[in-house]
Length: 255
Ligand code: PGA
Image (cartoon, rainbow, N blue to C red; front, side):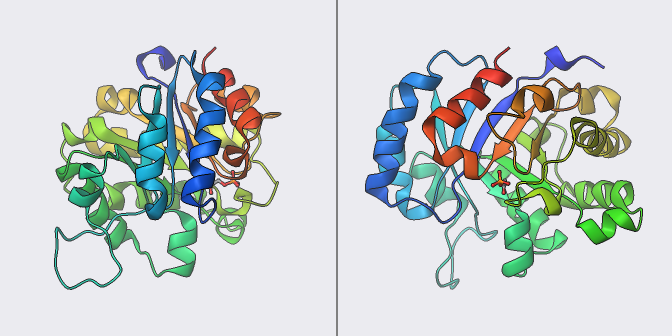
């Protein structure tokens, strides 16, 4: 197991926060604080914020991501956004299958797979979220579920396309709750995801895939989490809305 073959990625997930003007000023504040990062720095923002965010991030090491993408290239899908639209707007990453989308918007393992294929086909990097609920953990299904969700999400994804895939292990019980998985639980969950990729694509390929942890990662606990061998950075919700906190997480992943 060699962590150095993978570049850590710290990605903020702003969720439904910040107007375009607020996005611009938050990114301006973040730029100098993360300029020396030795990891990839991504901010996934609401669709409407994308033009302002791309403009504000220009010339910096901050990459812009979206929080969702539709799986069809175009057509009668009122209210949806295609991968080509995102690409043309300057988006490089997209979060797919976040637990909030699975819980509130009917996202399934099948639609996560279709969205991932559409994003990868368009040349976007997909940050695919997997994670168990507290009930599933208590019933002892964490490993089975994480492996299943990972393999379902990657159905028909080629070895080459996998280079543009990041998996974010986000235990549902840790998202936005202030309850963080212990570093051991995070490492174990990420390890299950890596094992699933190894089963599908082989050990060598699995070693090269960036697997993030997400769920109440913050300035205080990031050091311990990202030090774990299977934790290649994080997907950060609440703490990505505050420039100094986000910068501390980026610094932790840059060591
Ligand atoms: P949180 O969110 O950091 O606020 O727990 C993480 C996420 O939902 O990606």
